[in-house]
Amino acid sequence: MAINSEYHGPGDLPETIPVFPLPGALLLPRGQMPLNIFEPRYLEMVDDALRDGHRMIGIIQPDAAHSKSEEHPKLFQVGCVGRITQFGETGDGRYILELTGIARFQVVEELTVLTPYRQCKVDFFPFVDDFVARKGEEEVDRDAVLDTLTKFLKANSLKVDWDGIRAAPNEALVNALAMMSPYGPAEKQALLEAPDLKTRAEILIAVTQMDLAKKQTSGDPPVQ
Image (cartoon, rainbow, N blue to C red; front, side):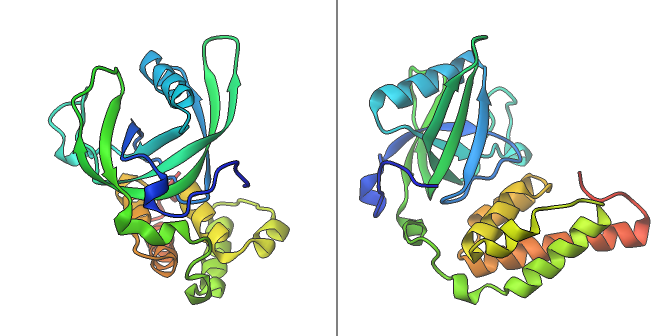
């Protein structure tokens, strides 16, 4: 998706960003994530992001396994920042957004702030390759990705737009399938933290194959 601002490297992004903890959510560079915002603290977060002009929101998962507080859960150390590229009001107090992923970040520290939403100082330099579109596409085993997708769809009696899938470049294909995958927070975090596109594709294939094998051996339904 085309956006009105270009980001060539970490220096083009703010060092402090608002973060939106969402379990099971995965945003990746150049991917699109729809959001339905209704909690007052996150409505304020969106207002501030628009007012400040950067339009940036960091999507990050809460680390429930290592959290002592449900109200203020510990966060994973890696998330992805997105720019608000679509915005609408519903008339009943909600915002409907679409974020376009820009780059992953490492949390340096969570800040003590007066805002009702959380903010973190972040470092984009560990993921500098995220600023290069379609980097590493040629290393992806596209046939293996499509073969695994075909088996997953068949096992779950699902249909997709095959024309669109065949036309999609490897980066868009792998990242879209990763973002839409029905797996849990641990798997989503592994997909997020994959060092490159090839590894992300391999993780996606492995997780899907394990799900399919579990269904075949136990008779359990696949992950929904």
